[in-house]
Image (spheres, rainbow, N blue to C red):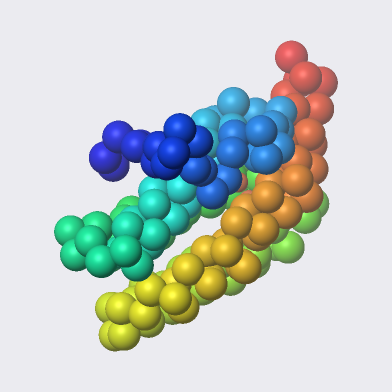
Length: 157
Ligand SMILES: [Fe+2]
Ligand SMILES: [Fe+2]
């Protein structure tokens, strides 16, 4: 992925999601992946804003970024699910079902973008669905999962 570039506008750093909005959980690999997802969301927001301002180069970068976001999510979910299986996490089905649902949603968003290149529709998805989903998912399912894994590993140590 390209290095993350913050937007400087009239001296103010414009980030759609700030690091402090993302809850920290008890496992480093999850926090690392969540930070990368946050950077991808901020980059997508930046590309959408620049595209809305007429920058065609930015618009061309949206499709590869959406593909990267899907691939990163798929790999991240697989890492979480492997840990849940390792410790026999009781709510594995519930958590992994939510991962499947979001991967299907990201696939649909990519296909819609490929068909229509509708910037406003993509901006609405990012603003109204994806950002709040990430924060909610981390603060609920991921936090509980990380806590459970931490306890199992502590008791086995
Ligand atoms: Fe996660
Ligand atoms: Fe998760």
